[in-house]
Length: 388
Ligand SMILES: [Fe+2]
Ligand SMILES: [Fe+2]
Image (cartoon, rainbow, N blue to C red; front, side, top):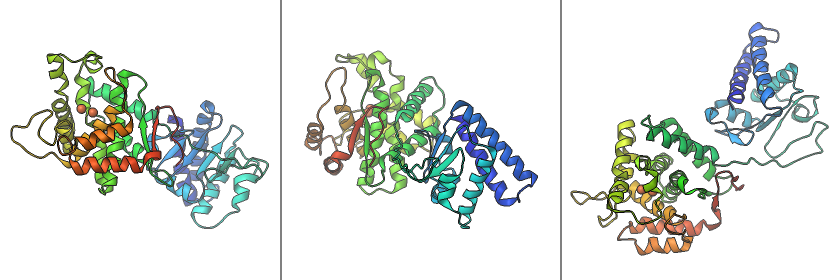
């Protein structure tokens, strides 16, 4: 991963050098040397690296390159038809130079013989649009390539984030935002929305999958209700962090199969206050996420926990997360109960609306879930998302 990102950074520097200096100029030659060296490093650990450039994302092999997100060259390269770039160990420095000058030619609008550049040169490099891969001999072999995106990196990041916070380290805000962005990318397919919800593999991974699912559901619901893109993202962060306070709860209580005793119940019910405290202490700007962590178990009629001293309404984001939280919890196998079918959960949400849940929000949620039926996919974190 590291070498792939370094190669791309060097690639961008060489593109700039090539556009500024004529052939033979030392700056240009040095930049090419450096990029070829990075490529050789990369090829030594990966004999056939594959890059996919999307508008705001770079995929290396099958995984998004997190640190290259929003890399400005990604949208430029994809804009000139270089959405897929493949190289192998036969690649020479001359091949690399040709690739760079072809890309520059296309970027400047000068025009090149694209078919020749892509397929016909005896080169270790191939490039083209996603889904079309020419073979070295020519244009005859066309193969549909799919990018298999999974949510495993996001799940790893959340596990790591919980560990960091549990051991008293800072809340890694950049990673939290990166996960929310990745979820949002996964949800917006080419043609239609997708609701990727993770299936639980192990009981003790509940908080990880649950956090990701609540984030996805909350963003989908916020979008369904017409909130702005910025709000949707902020609600996604709040959904991801709503149970952060659980990192302080011992696992034997968190995963207990039987009923909690009085002491255990007190520990468990402290997680909203604990979560709000953790968030606000670390990131005062995340005040909405802190409010949501605090309020997500408060019912519309004031029941639930923690109890308010004076009666007041909860934040809209808390009401959204509350519905999504209960939906995901009931859809999941827990040590003390089996998962419910989706219809049963939606009926439950409707039945409790006006008492536990805000009527309008619960109704909007079940309408959305029924409308999107086939687009709701349940998968494990290693399973690729279906193409949409
Ligand atoms: Fe909770
Ligand atoms: Fe929860």
